[in-house]
Length: 243
Image (cartoon, rainbow, N blue to C red; front, side, top):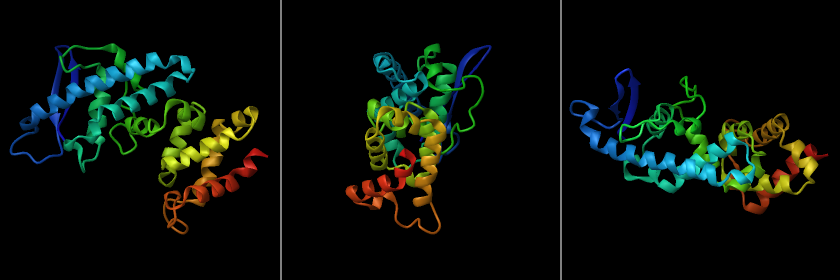
């Protein structure tokens, strides 16, 4: 997958092409493909901004809303479903997208400062940037749910989102749906207590202990259950937290 990595200095914007594909000489052989992707990423970021503005009335915390809006814009763009990304890791895509946000680099070589808020840490390179759990990977995962469902699942907390995402066995959307239903089955005051970051972290530890990523007990994961069976098991495991 060829991407454009933007840079800025006293002379203005410039870019280089980076790719995992085989090349005869340099990655510049794929500049046309990289330019095409870069234009599509403009649309992703513009679409995310529109969603942020249209969804403010939900009352979601700004950081949570921005992350969800970016993820939904990515999903609707189909960028990571394109043939060029088939069987490819998405790390280069996330790196290119992060740089566009930080610099505000449009494919037209203009700068758009509005994009900077779509990704945290505009000044320094975030520690997860370009990794398997890059911020944009989190956004993509978060936006698998509609915004209201995502808020109800995580209490509008990005820290809670990371707590679940960082445990691979707990990532399937069916588990998020059941967790949302379990929260909703309790009075509002109890829901608020359960969704506090410290309590949510303990809930995730309990679920991970039941479904570890590897080692003893890891053979049967949430995706291997029928819906009713998984729901019953989750409710049983989490019942003590609501007492």
